[in-house]
Amino acid sequence: MTSRLRLRHDPRPRPVERVPYSWLVKGAFFALGMPRDSLCSIDVTWRCNLRCRHCYFLEQGYERELSVDEWLAKLEELKRRAWPRPFVAYQGSWVGGEPLLRKEVIERCRRFFPYNIVVTNGTIPLPDWRDVHFFVSVDGTREAHEAIRGAGTYDRIKRHADRADLDVMITCCINRRNAACVEELMREWDATSVRHVAFEFHTPIRGLPADAELALSPAERDDILEVLLELKERYGHFILPPARSYRMMRSEVCRQTTDRCLYRTAGLVLGPDGERKRPCMLGPKADCDRCGCIIPFVTRAQVDRKEILRDWWHDLRRG
Image 1 (cartoon, one colour):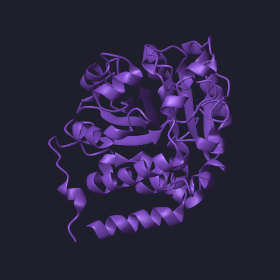
Image 2 (cartoon, one colour; image 1 turned 180 degrees about the vertical axis):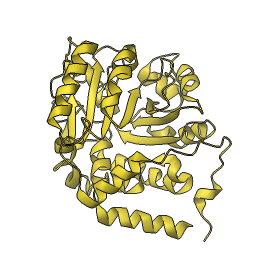
Image 3 (spheres, helix red, strand yellow; image 1 turned 45 degrees about the horizontal axis):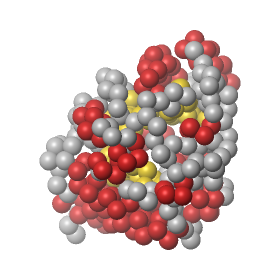
């Protein structure tokens, strides 16, 4: 059988991914499950240089952030508590606010995690950190993206993200304003050097005025998920996460994941003041019943042996 993955036009050869420690961790999750506090998310700062219409963080009301030395002391203490594990968590995600406004925090503190992700809006040039995975937020093609994130941002982000020397993934939060341009977005970013593209949906946030114009109905989400699964067949592993994560988001089964969200125990989420944030990085105002964040589904997909084996078998049959 001819693999559709091999038919994908790939104008720029992408670097072979490092082997990965992350694959060892995924193997451990498959065999043993996901330990408590194995994933850590840190709000590096409450400040941001954008004011995006769908931003959950603006509703959280932070005004204080730890200094670099305070973060170092905090992480040292968490590392001691994590013994015999030699690090705070398997994965550290640096978010905010815009985390690259405080690069020094990440530079000095990422040693506490073997696997580091920086989630950025991409308007600030990416540092030359070869050991970091950059998740750059791009919410549609130019017109849709700039309606959400502001005029003049799209081309700047594209310049910064299109770097073959770094591990860059584009992440798109799908909502009513950009749902129609998902396929065009894929075609456009397939012509760059970014390694992957990932999708999630807007999660309604209590008090966020833009929710009425952004939130999708369950039926609309299901229609888009079918498109994403078809694109996944066409683009293969250029689209992350695995197909099972998107299948778990379908309306008839998604509550099986969100009602017992694994991230509530596996995730250690710290606000900019260093205090633990619950239930997750979206904060207490998030509507968990209509969660569109990909993280609960990814974490569940990493331990669901039946679905993992199903995806492996599907990949083998494709060639």
